[in-house]
Amino acid sequence: MMATGDVVVLRVDAAAAQRRPLLDAVEAFCRQVGGDDRILGQVLVVVDEVFTNIISYAHDQNEGHGVDVEMTEIMPGKISIRISDDGRAFNPIDRPAVDTGLALEDRKVGGLGIHFLKTFMDSYAYERHGNTNHLTVTKQLWVPADRDKEGAV
Amino acid sequence: MKVTATQEGSVTIVAIEGKIDTDTCDDVEAALLAHINKGAKRLVIDLADVTYVSSAGLRAVLIVGKKIKSLQGKMAFCTLRPVIWDVFEASGFTSILTVCETRDGALAFCQG
Image 1 (tube, rainbow over the protein chains, first blue to last red):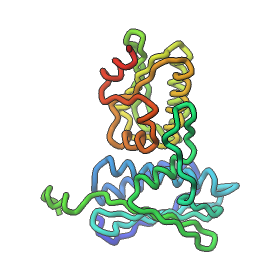
Image 2 (tube, helix red, strand yellow):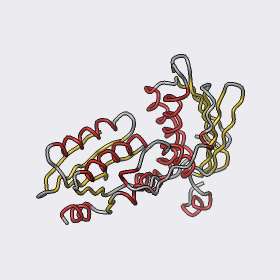
Image 3 (cartoon, helix red, strand yellow):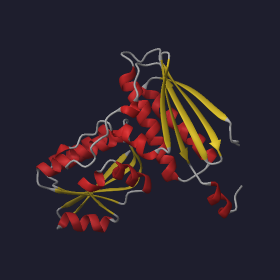
């Protein structure tokens, strides 16, 4: 059983084949914390987009590089996920906003991953330390008051 | 990921099952374009059994949407799960594509 403050640490290779195992691990962590499928799905999409960006753009050659993921329940029902990579410096937060109001024929999909990050997460922060990018997101998976109403913990 | 198609008059109903992500988006796109290439110009895309869509999946949706528009066809999505709706809405896709609550609603739109 997860307890608030427990940290789950994962390291996966920067490789497309690691995307599904990583998302499965994030899902397992979130399910232990609790919450519904809708919020879980939002978290998975964001981790997917961040990881996919890293393996697509962070390195000239992904071989020998990894991605570190640290997941914590920082408060009851609220999680923090920190994703770190040693790729080229990339701050997703200061990318220009996507124009989601364009007509169908003018729309492009580039940048939507970062847009999801900003839309779905409660907070997000980027730091560059030495050769490493750290992206930290938080999300409330369930509100303690809701839990009390359901008669759970 | 699985794609099943049925014909309802002039409308092709395509039901997708599974995840539409970087692993499956090319297959989804190819399956939908194959129906268009065979002459389908009115498409209902039923997402009731789609559990996950990432931006890679939206790219496929956008390509198919542009193709249908260029053919002056009609396309409607239906029965999105809450998280799929969130992804469509956050992307602005609910404004540029027709998204219906029910399959009947989507069918009616495409028949019109």
